[in-house]
Image 1 (cartoon, helix red, strand yellow):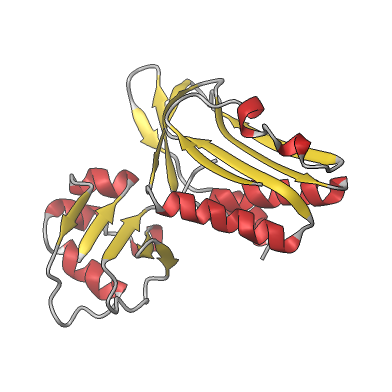
Image 2: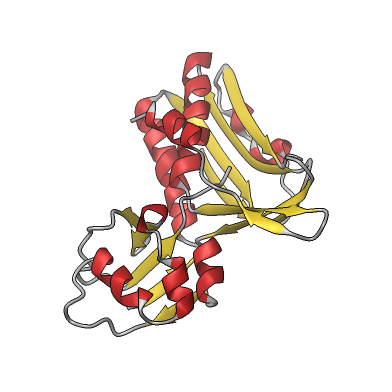
Length: 146
Length: 83
């Protein structure tokens, strides 16, 4: 089972991971990224590159299937305005034994951060907004999987 | 060629996409950026720091020196920040 979904409506881990526990495996692992209040942020806004986004996320899932013994994987990502406290992304993987799902989940979120065409803007309470800069720490984590 | 822009690049230029007839001497993305930077003050602002730009040709990430070849769509954008 491979699931990629870009949503302009609120997302939930429950929906994103649905079905992963029904694949006959013994392990489901997931990561949920949440819109965070970094010094007065009230919401973030996510822009993406329609078409390329979906294909790049499916390519990451295909690569995860090639590297680990997976039964399923899912990536569900919000776009548009996301209030602080709401999920931005849910990544999950299912496998027979835990090591594959654990490593594949870390791989999927680390590589999503550097490979998938999304851009994040922070909105502040005073009405200002700022595009978020890419972090070198994200590059470092992503390159672990090269 | 169809050009598409995202995030701060889109805001600096003022449009999300445009179609341009690039001159014949424009062979790779670096050439295209240099030529596009002369089209308006917004383009110049968006492209002033090439090290802060990323590129996709027909929706596949490529480096600055990639040849345009017969690609139909060039996307220019800042480093990605999803997740």
